[in-house]
Length: 150
Picture 1 (cartoon, rainbow, N blue to C red):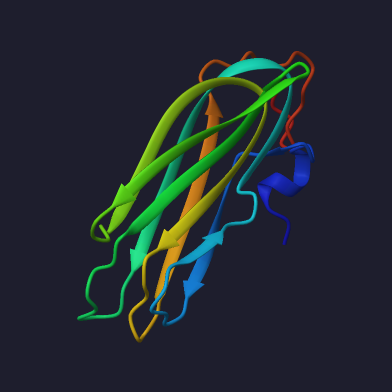
Picture 2: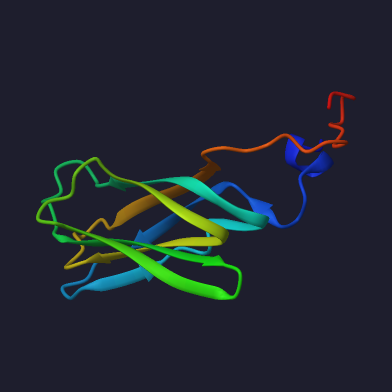
């Protein structure tokens, strides 16, 4: 079965995705990076709203751990590009860390880097999700959706 995205969404846009990172027992720090969660190449600059969430799934009774979540947004307009990093340190794992941002961009890539200072015996699973949407978007004249709507 094909999803909505398979029918008409161009290959140059992925508005959001999720990834799970698994950390095994360790006395030292561990750092992992998600695959690219967002990939947008737009024909003109827009102001984009970014939402990234990171959920920590600790085994029952595990002690909290400290670490850092870094949301790395690579954005570009024309031939200029930069990386905007949001670094969120934490002293204990919250159920969820949320990062919300608005930035101008024409091209966008988002990935999440999670560093844990140590990992309990049973390990930890971290689920990261990133989404983007244009704040303002003009309808494209002549674009026809699969059901015939314009």
